[in-house]
Length: 268
Length: 148
Image 1: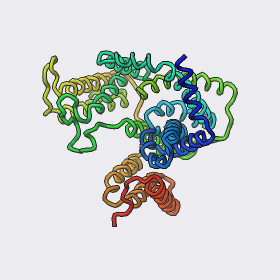
Image 2 (image 1 turned 90 degrees about the horizontal axis):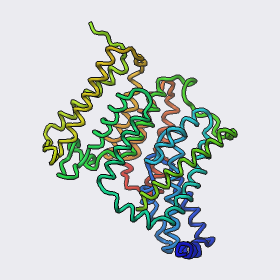
Image 3 (image 1 turned 45 degrees about the vertical axis):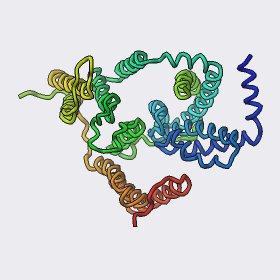
């Protein structure tokens, strides 16, 4: 079969000690840079591009892939420990990862994030390798009606999944849509809600918004509590209990489906 | 005299109304268009009115149904945190990275109720040195380090 022959060729070229070393090194510095809040995989690759200039094309590509995966994973560390999402995909990690860290299970949360990242990366890569042609054919058929349906689904899901008052949830969704309107309008290039600030012409980026909503809100609400009531982190070292670990595995599996989806979207 | 029974919902509603009205006022110049040929102002106007309506419902409901009170909160520390971010945005291009980071660290530390000057200054200088080393020297980002 074509697929296996191609994979064999790829592995034959990539699996040498030197290339694996490049991958390890790329992954390591990618994680180190990706940990910095607000610096996602794209920014990390852009900054570390010069590092790969001296390498052979194959080695450079392998190292960039390592940097990408490292940075993708690195964002989850700050999301778990300080509730600051490093990039848009680790916003979800904030929600349960940070709660675990507050209960003194930061070590378990970090471990789940690492194992989940590895597992999801593997599954996503296999899926892409196997189904890329089929997915590409499907992706071309994805037009405005489908995007509209997807967004409508997302907004309705946001209202349904919100805690508390439904009216407030609808209001926040509308407010979010209004924030999304900031920037240049696509049909007539009218600058909307930009206040003449050139930086706003591209719209409000998702990462600063998420950092403001999650990180800043956490800081502001911590200010009102005394030191002993605060959600301080304790016991990062502590190992996970049986039940927690098993639930973690469930979570990883649930995440993999989404991650594979996201991969398909990014590599399209 | 009308009594506010649910202060949280009441002020949330007022905020929605304020945001909606502000968006309506800022967006008053955008061409509205028609339903079949929407202008750049169509969606903003529709969303703003929807936001005002939601805010109205929330406010009205807060007068009828009991709800939780708003927790007392200290305004000054919160202002210091927000001021730190605004300061950084304003100063990074004028004073350079090193000074901006020191000022941000000091301003943000003022928000804490148990801050000590020696600790704060050490922290500010440490963070500034780290930022310059990491972003400018190791990652080669085009920041201006010193303005003078």
